[in-house]
Image (tube, helix red, strand yellow):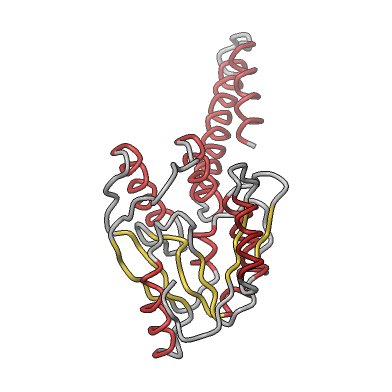
Length: 250
């Protein structure tokens, strides 16, 4: 890391790894008292790891970054300078301006997700936004008050408010290893983001329920009209469908 001109602590979160990461962290801890670590008993996922890291960070300024170096440490100097020079600024976030090196389909889906969120969510979620950011203590404390189990940190960072400035940078490939995120995991992670930070799915369900109730009402009127006015016997299928549609709409 670059010299930030301040006392620094390093909080690593070992999310149930099986590649010797924990042993390395123990060694680093022995060599440097500023190194601390949290070790999970199993893999609980990125969001749990990020939350645990924030819980154990004690600094006045807190940085969230991945250990695969896709988050350039060289940007920390600019982040800190912006916070030092702007007392009214609470957070410096980052946005990727490109996705070079990623599979085309994955990049396409990511772009579609951000466009969709910008249209259906009241929370401002810039395209390409990353978890990589430097925050003042007040921002971290606000995030830690949000204890929901299904977390979507990009949305939480935006939802708590606070003045944020974004730095743009091109995509940086991993320095080692391969991502453990499958397309299926990313898909359901995106669904969580949509459900947690948009009323749009609930609105769709509400409108569909109203339409179903209206259709059942029309069918009921039709059955009553045909039976009482025309004298035709009531159709079991029609009346049954009317009841099913009404109950389904409710």
